[in-house]
Length: 602
Image 1: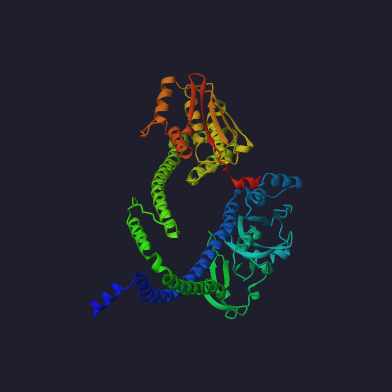
Image 2: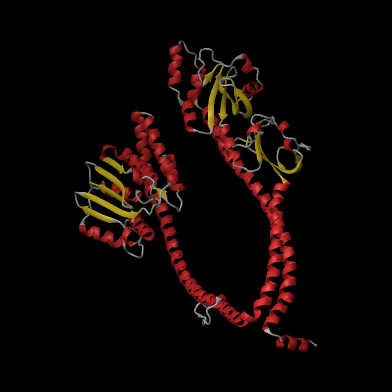
């Protein structure tokens, strides 16, 4: 019986075989699998939407925590600031003395200007000899009777968060409140830092679902719906009251609509504070996309099956032989044989498809070769990028350099005072941060020159009048993007080698210009210079395919990365004469690539 059926099938025409095989082998399985996959796809869409909601809440939590952590960190520094304690506890004999004391302590004003996350800062002190200004206030009886003020005085050093009114502008802020010990039990101050709730509202406004931040007293301190600003959780019509929970994921009926409620505590570095993020979204909004996908998938499956039956029935007898031949060639290509070429006959669509198939196979072959070359080049670029990042850091912040810089800072502090030391330490920290955070992408000329200036200022602090420099950058070049750590190694080379045997000092100039689609960078110094034989050795080292230990690692790395990024003509050009100085330059195409953010800031 089986042999008879096989013989019957073998005797059938290819058109009938295609129709029969489609109905028996394709139609029924595809229908079953389609129904199953549609259900799974709906479930996947639902879970994906729910997961996206969790991720949104987590993103809001991270960004909001960053905002309030600024106030947390600032309160820690101020509460242990001896100058602030002395200012608040000192007994003043005249208004002029108070004025002088306020003028010599600008830290609160500077903090407000420095941190956009802070709206304002005020410090209450029970010192009757002080004058009320915008930052330092004598607490009136009405303030002393408030719960938050009494709690801060009772629990010195403990941070509290509350939604309170600032008596200076009568506006309500999410505020950090902390009692400060001024030397005795009867001499205490209260520090209040207002958080920029506008920034919190901006963070929440980017969310599609209703998202709010509430404090321990259920006050809504920030929301993505303006009508909820300054309200309480009583405005949220929750039948089950889950919005009052501290954390967790719940289902409830919110405003007569089945909803999902996600609650995440918003704790700061100092610990639990009662703040929490509440995100509310209707279940219908989650399943809407899933239902739409299910209907669309079923419609596509049914239409595709019906259309396939019709097309196979109508055209199988015309295309079967040539289609089978095309299928064989596709199978060969699928196994990795890209050297096949299909014999083309006819000028109809199948003939055109055959020609396109041959072209596609050739393009795939070429593309694979290009991808391999591109991957190799990318690997080399990443290798050089990582190498210059770590080697430059090692060159700039090695123990010897760090020791000399810190020793210079110590001597300068002893001789001149604090201002210059603070500036150098800030530059050193900025430079270390830039090196640590640098990625494998590109940076702007403006940012690169800023790091170069940091490096030169630190070296000038070390060498004093022996080192002078000049940075000349055209405004058109500021926004041009280049690989990071391209100019700094050249400047470092000028400082280290330019000052060799140069007791009278060295002058370094960096010029950056942009014209006719080209970026030109020149670093030059009037240092000791390089002998011709040594210069030839350096050129040989720059162009050597195998990197060797020693030599001018920074120069070679910059040279190789420029060539890998912009082509062989983009490498370094070095001019030097002993006793005269050294000039290193390179030119690269801008390619219209600039920092749009810099444009907007401008």
